[in-house]
Length: 292
Ligand code: THG
Image: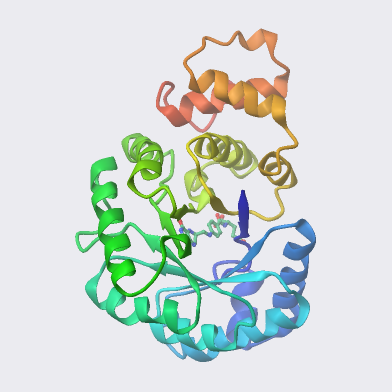
């Protein structure tokens, strides 16, 4: 499992001002901390960056590279900023992301080959969010076709089906899982990723890790290649690295529909079992789902 650290982002209360003021301290501290935490990539998320985004992305790439050799994921919807970052990235960068709007495809697909980068193909179409697994499949075929036409190999394409919050629309979440299982057949050689913390958006902070970790285990079982994650969730990192086989086993048993007796599990394992049921839609989400 390839892990991409999400923490260096403009929404963060320490990183946001540092990016705007070009203050290297907090940015480099974060890049160092994520490196130490053991992620494979660091996501540099500057948001839409409408004003002088190119200067900001160039600055943050250079600033991070002073303190880390990790691969970089350049996270912006501004194609000019994207190119400015690609120009100064030392290693093969990950373009995060390219969606299916014609103007985005036209401007950004050529950057992938020009800078020998990889790309995240975000399944966001001209009509916005795909409604189900089949719409996701159609968008995936479409973006793979267009990227291949632009000379990009499937190996360099990471499909992102868009993971949505569990507290919002359970059917969207189900569609995301269903699509993940289909992707292996659509294009066995292409890669995949999700913004894992999206699933726990709007849920109580101390419980977010259970949703994130359980969701990761479930998606890994469907062949997920990588995820954008909280680099400082050490338990999540050890699960991703295969160091928590008992938790993974419990999640798999519940996924398989086994009526696991919660009293036979440790308190910690039971939390994962309950969380699977919420993510599959078997149990209704409430902010206190672990207490029920
Ligand atoms: N797909 C792709 N890229 C993405 C996403 C995706 N990039 C952005 C996002 N989704 C993934 N990154 C984050 C970063 C932070 C959080 C969630 C996803 C987050 N942060 C905390 C919060 O907002 O409460 C804390 C913020 C802080 O650092 O202070 O939840 O889906 N391709």
